[in-house]
Image: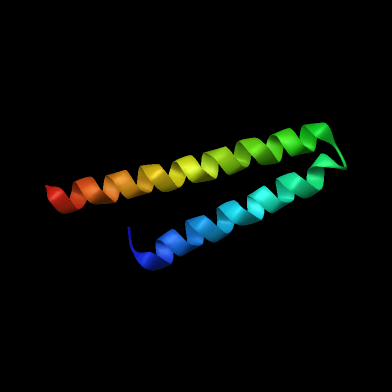
Length: 58
């Protein structure tokens, strides 16, 4: 994965984690939604990384 793309995924994930932390005090359902979005964002980063690695190898 290129460095700018890795930076994008990391910053986006950290922003979602901050949104999760802030939303805990407001609404539990909103916090759960933000948590799921955070997990999906981290997973998408791993998926993109794996696909790009496979493309480079073969």
